[in-house]
Image 1 (cartoon, helix red, strand yellow):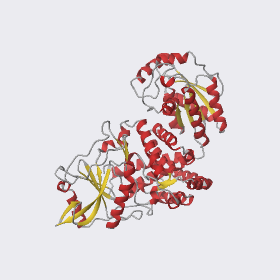
Image 2: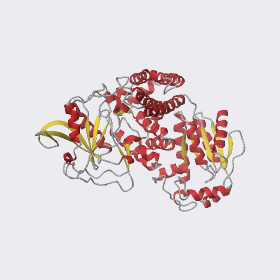
Image 3: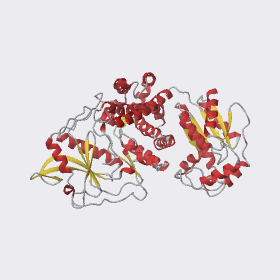
Image 4: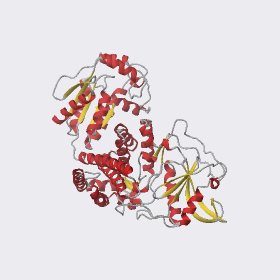
Length: 569
């Protein structure tokens, strides 16, 4: 289907140093491919057929449907050379992906031959099998939607919920759990390092290679018991295996529930889709070594991919919501480790392009740049494995810009950003981007909702801090008692705390609140709320733990001031 990616990207370590290029196909197979491009094969409603291909598949696009045929290739970690194998793996791919996208994956169809002509289904000699799917526009792929800022927090919540439900139903047991052992994990990493030795000085620096290797080896040695507890607890499961933005569709408004069109040989129309505007596809079916893992590795892959795309806010929200849906706080201790692994693998497989004679100089230059970015990200995660967590309390009145500063700071210090406006709506089951202001002290701001919001924010902060992650708590913190609670939350896990008081002139606040009314924002506060809170706000007393920033000044100035203070605590 559209969006199908090269399977080489899927091998977490793989049995060959470089998957290379498949052998040339024999003339009879080439002729069969040519016949698959004939629109007549797909019925009267099809006027033209386009083909995409990867290392392992051909995908024939008719405008309404996609037909995926597996190539008769053997890469060691994958073997499609026999008809029975291709039938089995088509069936497996259908079975696994039906769970997440039943309206995309339609059926497995035989390709038959009679009187020298091919036919989809029907009588005749079966010469191959294909997976029939609905064709969706390439621009709906999440990677493309991210480029145009069309991925919302609600989309990310849907992904987190879908994956949580998928994991709850996923296969587990002794045969699966072996893939989460420290021995297998060490083997995967050893292969990674062996396969990237030649790229030192090209796509990964010698320092990054050495420091990442040392940090990873120390972590594995120190956490054998943790890996075993995760296995014993049933957290190693048969996962999606390739969860990232290239394997997710973000449907455009109004597209949910569209029926299939077309006629003739087009497959049956499926049942209406599950509600929601995301579709996760392309689960790994061909090798359990790449699909069986700790669920933490799967969540880390998606979070790393969002980090790579420059959307740490979405990455953190994805993790936060997955934890809400599953209560699996234990995965946090492995999150950065698996982020490091996933980014390293991406750097590795992208580096393989440098050795491919079929790739031109321009594409190799692009691959080199991409691989470097992945390796830099992996190294950053590796260095975070031994970092000491800190708590930053970002306080101030509505509209002063504290959330903007907090988001930028979270990116720079690799912290989880906990925003009270978001948590409040999560607790009430309201989409976090939905505006729900009904007046000061009314609606979602009445009664004890504020206390519950702060309680939950403190609880989450302790969970992340105790797992080794720095946290930014972003709220008004009107009074000394809420600030004292933050100090106590940090003290319980032995983390130092820094308080950042954000402020700016009221004329700037007014301007920002006017813009907020027409732009995306978690907060519903307006100028009336600002003034009501200003009358009750007690600015913090000056002390060593307080940093004051003027958000009317350049953002770099505020961030530098905060980071200098963090170095002192």
